Image (cartoon, rainbow, N blue to C red; front, side):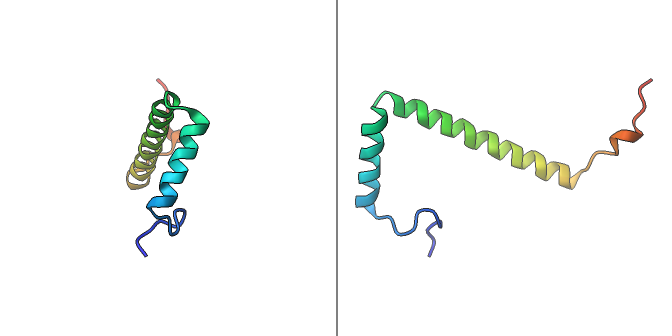
Length: 69
């Protein structure tokens, strides 16, 4: 039961079929670009989550109380 929910019970055969379909749809040259885009999206998501955790741990003072001199 260590499989993520969205993968279900995928075996090696199913993964190979999915990989072949992706290869046919996007072509060999587009796949590295897609993976790079996915990697950037995941990195951005993780950075956002880390920023939210930092904000929760150390909230800024109320911005209404700041005065500009």
